[in-house]
Image 1 (spheres, rainbow over the protein chains, first blue to last red):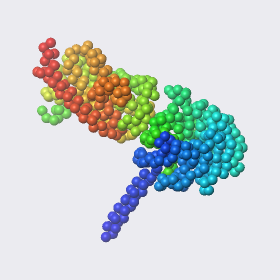
Image 2 (cartoon, rainbow over the protein chains, first blue to last red):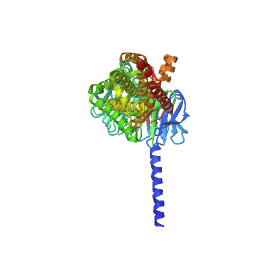
Image 3 (cartoon, each protein chain N blue to C red):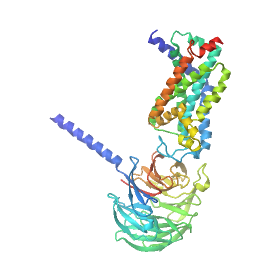
Image 4 (cartoon, rainbow over the protein chains, first blue to last red):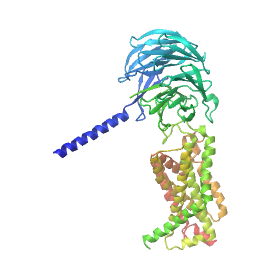
Length: 327
Length: 267
C-alpha cells in the first residue's frame, strides 16, 4: 500500500513538474504592430510561430504594455488615437486622446502616464491613463519622435528630428528644463536601468550617443560602421540596454543588422544579421531574448542573448513596426 | 577466405591511405587551403550577396560564409574523390596497382576498400575544416556536428565512386586535366554549393535545372540539412542512387574481361 502511495505521489510530482516546465517554456507572447496590414500580430516566440493576426485600426505603429502586462497601448496613427487593448482577450477596451498622428510614445514605470510625440504639431501630449484625459501639451522642437521616461519618474526626454535636440522635460512641472544638441535626426532614446545614462541614436550621422543624465552632456559617441556596408545604409533607430547594463543593442535600419555594444566599455562587440530595415527592438520579460521588427522583409527576428545569435526569423505581416512581449 | 582476411585487407588499405595522408603534410595543408581560400577570401567578398530570403534548413537570415560552408565541405570531398582517382591512375601507370589486384580477394571488395579509405581521409579533412570555421564564427549546434557524419559518409562514397568510375576511363595521367575541366569545375560551379537554386532560377531556368540534377548539388544539400539537424529525404535518395550507379559502373569499368580494362590490356 505504502509503495503504491509513494509511486502515485512520484507520478503526480513528475506530471506537475513537466506541466510547470511546459508552461514556463511556452508562456510568452509577443505583440507586433503591422503598419500596412492595420493589424496586430500575436507571436509565440518559444514555438517560433505566428499565432494569429487581429485587426486593430488604421496604421498601427507605437506599442507599449502596462507594467502588470494586462493592457496593451497601440498608437493607430490614422485614427488619431492610442487604443487600449486587453492583453488576454485582445479586445479593445478604450481609447486615449493622443492628439494628431501619434507614432511613438512612452509609458512611465507606474503605468499611469503616457507621453506621446505629435510629430506634425511639434508637441508632446501627456495623457492621464486612468481618467483617459490629456492633461498637458508640451511644445518641443520640430518633428519630435523618440521619447522616453526615466524609471525614477524624474525625466521625460523628447528627441526632435529636425531641431537635432534632446529636450529634458521635468515630470513634475511638464516643462523643458534643458536641451542637448545631438547628431542629426535623433530617432530613438533609452535610459539605462539605473537612469544614469541616456542612449540616443542619430539616423543621419549613423551614430549612437551616450549622454550623462546628470550633466546632460554627450560622454561618448560611437560610429556604427559595418565593414562591407556602405555608409548610407547605416541608419540607427531603436536602442535598448539590458537591466544589468552589460549590453546595449541598436537596430541599424537599412544595414539589416543589430549592433551589440558592451555597455561598460562602449565597444562594438558584433553585428547580427536580421531582416530588412530593422527598426525597433524589445526584450523578452526575462531578458533572455531580443526581438526585432524588420519592416521591409515583413518579419521579426529572435536573438538569443546568451549566445548573441539570431535563432529565428518569423513572417508576421506587412510592415512590422513596433513590438512588446508579455510572460 | 574468411572474414578476417577481408578485414585485414580493408584495414590495410585504409590504414595505408590514412598514414599517407598524415605523413604527407603538404597534401594535408593543400587540401585545407582550397576551401579556406574560398571561405576567407571569396565568401568575404560576397558577404552581402545573401541575406534576402530565408530558405530551409536556415531559420533566419545568414551571411554568405554560412551558406557556402556546406558547399565547401562537399568541395573537399569532391576534390578528395578526384585525388583518389588520380592516384589510382598513377598507381596503374607505375605498376603498383598490380600488387593490389593480385590479392586473392574479389576485385569489387578491393575497390570498395580503396573507396572507404578515401572517404575516411575526406571526412578527416572536413572536420578539420569545420574546426577552423568554428573559430571564424561559423558554428552549428553540437548535434549538427554528429548528424553531419552519416551525410558525409554517403556524399563521400558517392563522390569517391565517381572518382573510381572516372579513373577506369582515363587511359593516361595526362588526361586528368580534362577531368578537371569537364567534370570537377562544371560539377562544382553548377551546383548549390555557391548559390541557392532559387537564385539561379532568377538568371537562367536551364542552369537551375542542370544544378538540380547535379548529384553534387544533392550531396551538398544532404550535408547542409544534416548540419542543422534535419534530414533531406530527396537529397538522401538522390545521392544514394547516384552512388549505386557510379559504383556499379566503376566495378564494370575495372572488370578485366568486360570493362575498360580490356581496352587498356589490348593497348
